[in-house]
Length: 213
Length: 328
Image (cartoon, rainbow over all chains, first blue to last red; front, side, top):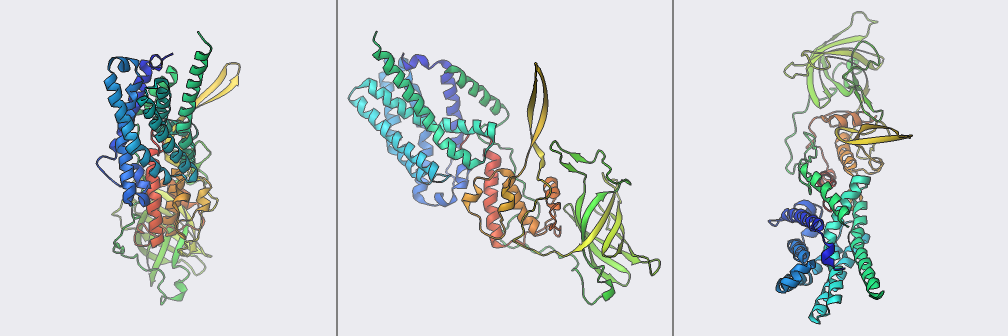
């Protein structure tokens, strides 16, 4: 079963809405302001130039990474406008490998919530870089099934920006736990959940096809 | 795979319809009037008539000083609850009593000069004292100026180290008559003093309505709306923001109720008289708390100023981002 068929209109609408919310979050940091939202709690870090560049590099590119990746799953777009798929793909890959993942690693080292969440974000940044780079390499080799698999993994991590916040919203609404405890939980849930879902999906596909026609 | 997405979508649309989904823009963090941390020293508010002038007749010394206790509704009957009493779901009652500091500052002849601090008001009073017979207690009749809508007249007597009396407002305010029974207390700023187990903190001005359902089986159930108020946890008994510099790591996991109490305890240690009712009711119940000033801006230590800044940052963050779609 092709991914494109599974992505019904409802899912695209949901993704579009969350992209809109992420855009709202991004806009809080436009223009550059060291004392707003998340940065209000990062006074020590944001005084350092390397963190300033990392933070704003990450925040200013990630929204485009999210958007560029969204349409890549559509078989319609891939079949009819292969150039669009490749161009958006290069934007996706370029922004991640050159900016979003390295800056994510720097920020991860300084993450709130102590070693536990710092580990999660650093691991995420490394895997994100790794999956995306591998997917690019496989595309160059025209190994489409594997390219697709690694792009799914890459986008699972891209989407963690959204799912982390959804988990946080849900957990707070139901349990109202202390804020950092919540953060330490969603720092892992946000991406592990997505990645496990993708791995399961891919495993299912492999087993279906191996059963034979 | 469609349905989970759609239901989250609908949930978030609903959140959005109530305002900004990523931030609670209406969230305000109450910083009590007269407590803001200022970098340049504020000119000290003219000190109220200095307490106890030694040099007065020593026989008046027993009357001079801060008399502290509760300023209660005077309805004629004891334990009279009326529609001015406050009842909350969790068995929390506030019968509109406030801690008062009635300070007799100077006695010259039979003239009495003093001031009272209660519920965020600091008002002077002047009057006379006298006694009918030698065996009778010293009676005081003093009046407040009258240019504040909560001004009135005190009538009290002092006997055996207890001050007892009534108060009548000039104007037609909600609670016109009050009674009180006070004891002399001396205020001393102690940065080490901590919150004790007394009245619970309940912020009844901010509530989330929650539907509660009780299922009795056989298809019978009862539904009602319960109010959820911000309260505090054990942290308020453990964290002292006046005697040591707080670290980010001990503050970043606290919810708004705790942050608010820990910050306001700094003010309470300085004898700040609270205008905010839930806070006032909470601190009044602390046995060591005496309302002394309505403006304490020049009283903070540098350590306290830093802690206030830190606590406020996390309070604002909690108010704006805890309930929203975001990592906050």
